[in-house]
Image (cartoon, rainbow, N blue to C red):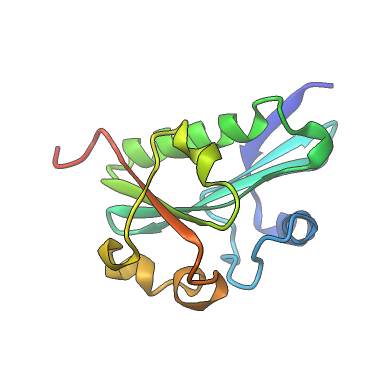
Length: 149
């Protein structure tokens, strides 16, 4: 009954889309290869996903979900922390996310709400920011240690 967290493979996209749809999360703009996406599996069954899209020195954390029966076990946290550590290693300066329901969850990872007008153009140009997420969605930002290194 151990949980394994591994990098997503392109052929797993269909399973990822199914899990995201179950959670009412966006799937229309998922990157084809699922690069920088992590999958959590239990006994080979997909139970969680989290992804990070890169835009130069900026990242967009997205698609963080764990099946309801597995929530509260720290699985999402492990994936988020791993993605943030990878982002820092890659020299990213800051990571953004857009949420309609989970802003308080992401507080614990150092994310803080930001004004939509302060968001870099690269993030503003994403389909998530510019149309898929409602304008009432909360945009959050976390600076990484590597900033201005």
